[in-house]
Every structure is written in structure tokens, then in C-alpha cells.
Image (cartoon, rainbow, N blue to C red; front, side, top):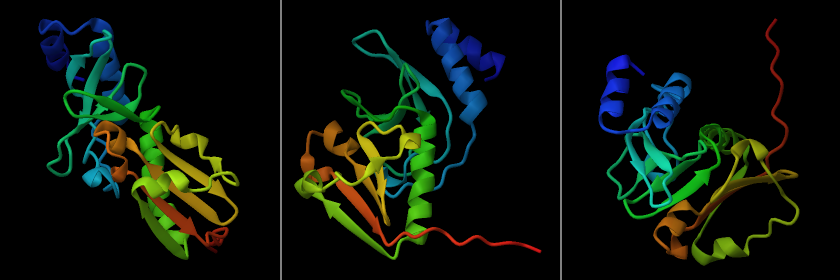
Length: 188
């Protein structure tokens, strides 16, 4: 974060600690061009901090980057580094960390490449999915959006928009079946 931008936020009454968090986010993630996410209308196109706001609890959130498409919500970084969405009235944490969002994007492409079958489930049926033989991917740091694995199956469950808009019909799950260990390629 340049000293001019830093001064801009400080001059607008943003606390030093919040500006420091924004600068740390910029140093680690700023400018990272992201692949399109299959949900959330593609997600943010590129990470960049902007528009810090204080919520009613006194916690500061800031924008994570511009949306890829015109949607009624934005992407935010929370006071403890959470990655989430907000619509101006409510916020929902998707992942407990920015790295969790990035890991979930990587899993979409990896699971989609190796699965022999992909099934999409929408609405209230998502709540009926059996996760008992699956374990969560800890790298995803899932909050409202989670990833599960077990045997030859990987499952992604997206509840963020459903929670933000209080509409269970917006839940989506992707079930990736037939994933076997990826072959090892050796270059000689």
C-alpha cells in the first residue's frame, strides 16, 4: 500500500490498525488475479483492499476486490482475516481466511478435472446430503462454504448466499465422484 493511499485512509478517520490490516492484505494478496469461481457469479476478479467500514459491533471490514459480474453483494475481509460476502445490511463469512477462499478455488478446478461424475444439488435437498463418511478439508477453513472428502468422493457445499439472503433455495452442493489418485508423470 503506497504512503499516499495510507494517508488517504488515515485522513478519513480509519484507525491505524485497520490501515495496517489493509496494507498486510495488499502485501500478501493484492493484485492476485483469480480464476472464476463457479458460484458467487465468478467471485472477485482480483484481490485489492478498499472501502473500510465499521459494523455495529465496532469491527472493521474492508472490500476484497471488485466483483466479476454485477451482483447485489460484495466481497469483504473481516476483522480476523475472514473472507465473506455482504449486501450492505448483513455479512456472511464464507471462509475463515483468504487462503481458504483461494484453496476452495483450486479444489474446484482440481476436483472437476479428476472426477468421473459431477452432480449438482440445489435448495433444501442440500441439507439432506450424508456427510457421515466424509471429513472436512481443513485447508479450506470453511465457514458457510465447506469442502468434504472421503474415498473417491469430494463434496463442496455453498451456503453463503442462502444465509445472506435468508433463502435456503440458494444453497448449492457439487458432488465430485470417481476421483482416484492422480497419475504421477515423470519427465526424463
